[in-house]
Image 1 (cartoon, rainbow, N blue to C red):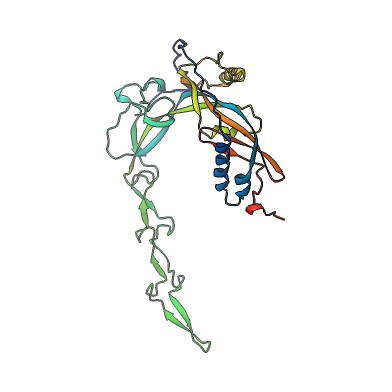
Image 2 (spheres, helix red, strand yellow):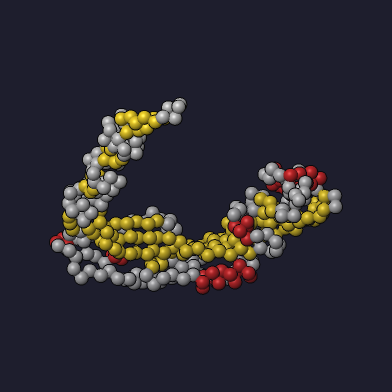
Length: 340
């Protein structure tokens, strides 16, 4: 028997609970200040990571000026769940079959599927209750094996030594050629197929040799995080992707079913972009909204101007790990040589 008139469709997820904004306290860390020695040490460390960069500019640089600021990494994440149902099958190995005789299949959103945790992306396939039935394998017609494709079911193939001729030719030094019996195939010109070992058949891949298939409706639960991010940086020159890749100090975190936009953050730009990111978050109608969180990470930025001989350049030391960005550093190729 098969499941009749079961159409899960694109069922709308259950409605969300009412939102209650939590109380929050915002504490700002002090702005990091780096001395000349720390700035120079960070630059020297960066130069050592590039085998073709010369070390003299970093060792002899004159730090003319430094400016300190904070970059803010604003992240809004929305955790959602999508459920899809489709027919599938697998080899039947004699296990219990939960068919329509046990009841009507439940709707997709009423099936309990365990969750690892919020904001943990995962894809979980599971069998929809009361949808299973067993059929003869369509791949092998219930035989458990199929004809071997390389030998077309014959069980043999041309001899690799004599190319199927049954004999080989031997050339002498004077140019004469003699025909000799192929000892590899005993003159038959054939050898056992290496794919089926001479049987002419291989195990059916559909049923794995079990002759029957179990058909059922499979529920696939996909939980994933929709992520939106904004980098607020005041020095104008430090690439946003570099800022996002370094560690910083977490200043603010709020998590709930939904989170409100920031209104009391010291940077008005961060307040504005928090509202923008929230408004740009879109969840499909067939997805269930599970949780949302907003995180602001502060990353200290030191913008430095230095000179070496006749060169004057700007570079940045940023993040709590003191990463360096020095695109205009002198001697970036083979200790100052110039490529023609």
